[in-house]
Length: 340
Picture 1 (spheres, one colour):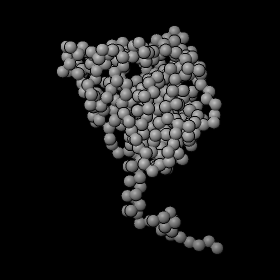
Picture 2 (spheres, helix red, strand yellow):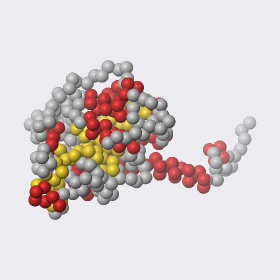
Picture 3 (cartoon, helix red, strand yellow):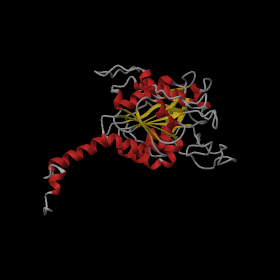
Picture 4 (spheres, helix red, strand yellow):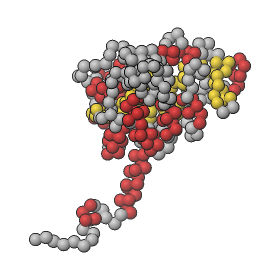
């Protein structure tokens, strides 16, 4: 999809968003693709460069703020979304992007994440999901699959993991998408759609850590298996997948199920990312291998008032109804006296 939003804004290129800092990620890390597509996509956005704000927490993903030539904060563990919320409320014109990892966002930052989704703060949140704590050397994270051997679970992780899409949509996110780190075209498209969306936009990137979870997403992302293991969603189109495009997704009772098109073509669901009810979108986010393909692309995109709109409308209403037009008027409204 081609999106052109340039109107009376200085023409920018990818190079305008490349900083002078040496990129320090492991060779082969999926973070490089996210950085490259973020720089490219920033150049397409209808914003002055000085209005871009990049905010991160702690972890390998959070080094990205050094590599993007924008205003930014490298904040503290789990608090990137809180910092971003304050910045957006203080200056609604800012184009604010939050970069975080599955550990940073789903663990210590989990409370900030769910309430941001609930409030529908106008932020763009990119979650680098490699299903491990990478920077701190391989401990289980909240998205580590059961049975995965880690530094904190050498016999295999025994905790049930979060599904980021289920958490985001269940908490009220008005936009949720999932993208593999080796699909630049889809990543760019989803980033642009997130930018155009007014409200909390959450993008989960299935990102490969070559050191601690190398190949964790390979069954989904590899050239040989992705056609059968990815459900590429497009709004208004049937949920069809497979190398021969011969499989689809239908509703079976209270669940989603895959089916052969020859048998049940008429039952294949048409994707509606704008549906306000959350049940189907959560079910799509929860599709997992080996029984089902993993949903990719924009799963949910609904319109509702953003937190900033509601807050600033409330402030303006109070100002109009208040008998005090300034803080000085308030201070002088009661009993006063002069001190000589």
